[in-house]
Length: 324
Image (tube, rainbow, N blue to C red):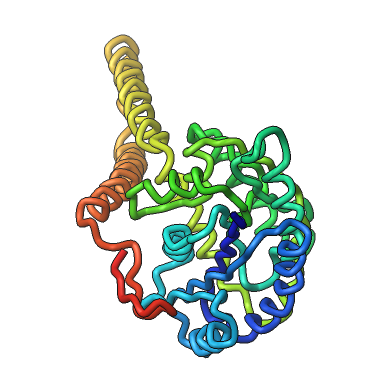
């Protein structure tokens, strides 16, 4: 029986680049069919686009039924789009890739070869993941911030994410099933991919140039995304609050003892208003910081308990209106 690969493509306001993406991926799909006997389909996830993206996806499907699409009722974010794509995979394999051609379609053949290589019909790997090997096109801040994020993330969690890891990844059905079985709504896919385990082959790649449109990831969004990722997979910030609380209690006890001894033995007066004023500001700021950290965790618990859907499907080529 012929194997099927589902190519999942999250889209948000990508009307300018989608025709170019389709043109670039078609030769690769033909190569996979002729050389590997692998049937392919495209699954576009329209993440609430407000331009002509949805109209283009309808046209793609009318021309070729293997070009499937799902459209959200609003912008739920890339993590929701990834989950929707994986939940609607029909095939034996799935690959996640961006529509902006920064994930080169020509690498799909290599990824499939690596995934299915090795002893046994299932291959020796469950997924093939790509990491950025050349980030010269990125600015100094973004390049170094990204590297620092992966180092901090790995130290603060029990994960081991490769520096420069992307969502560009091909995986088999068992790994797909494991990922979609996780019910959490605050999702960080790179962490989930690592947490579920399975054997992963890492390959370097150079990001392609975006031929049209603009990146949807500003520096502010990347910083916010990084904090969300750390809070999703690490309790270290909470432990840090506890340890700093203990340290400050010990410091205050030692300082109080020193002042008591100085006053009792030497008769030195205790420092007055400036010292008190600075200590109040310091401790007040620390307390507010700790409350903010705990508040972030409570907010995530609150959202999980409410059990709101990760995304809502407004339209798809299969005429299903589903809440997920």
